[in-house]
Length: 113
Image 1 (cartoon, rainbow, N blue to C red):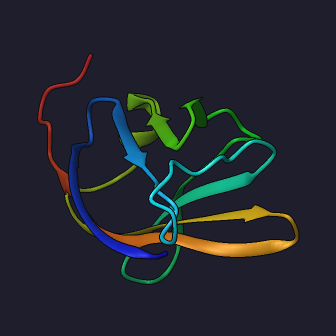
Image 2: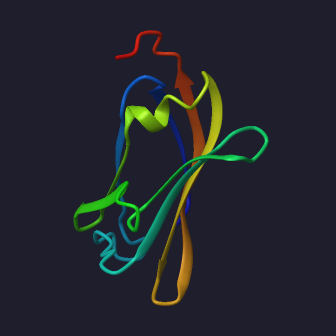
């Protein structure tokens, strides 16, 4: 199921993103009820810089087949401008499945509140 994503975000603002996931066989929206989901961002040295999950509240399931994550500006401020690796995985029914991998470009937002 894994896909390759490219995204960009500012290091002085919230990073909010949604991903719609359909079953590869039926095209129906995936039901993630009860799933453990994790979204992570790593730097070039493979150090985790952001980690969100359903458990810590940074990943939510607003409707069937939709995964949404929100890293507040306070989390994003720890990232220097540049390229980062990102990925997502979920665990359901004793299976761990990759959702996506990709690249996150962090843009220096200059101003901050």
